[in-house]
Image (tube, rainbow over the protein chains, first blue to last red):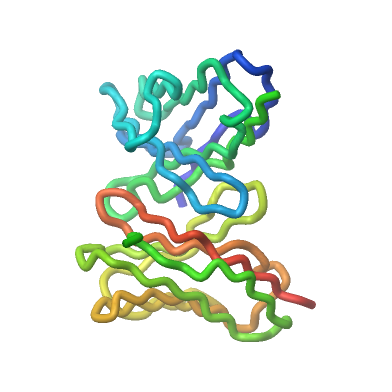
Length: 116
Length: 108
């Protein structure tokens, strides 16, 4: 299957600072990438859909000024958590994929963010 | 009404047992149905997908979709301890709609 690489896998930051998470498609071009958030023992919650060269589409209730998404190339999308607070601590996962059924089907390894 | 309903378990079975994991969904327009396996603190891994109704088999895994009843199943034969993980069903429309996941433990 397609390979999606996410970095870093784990980050601890101080409250008030910003954190950038990278998501790369390694062996294909992804015009669309998805960003999810997952709390312990809960399912994936879609935060936003990232389209190459255009603004991301955010799900209801997700603050676009807090979670900045940039999709500058066909192989890279970034999520920046700005002015992080302890309640932003969570598992963040990106996905991408080929078109059709596999669009968005392959996930990165996830990033465990802890804000102290 | 939620798009996808999945029994969160946990489910615990002895090694070698047949496991049945199930989901129901509400949107009859869904055409693709994915199953993901997620190990603790890892991203989900695509296990199988089916298109429309019917069965699909891959080794010890069989995915089944019944669109008339909006019911999705994943069967695992001869379950192994390495199958211990959380399994998520994910019908696909314009986006994926994930179930809450069923936590499975296979006891040696």
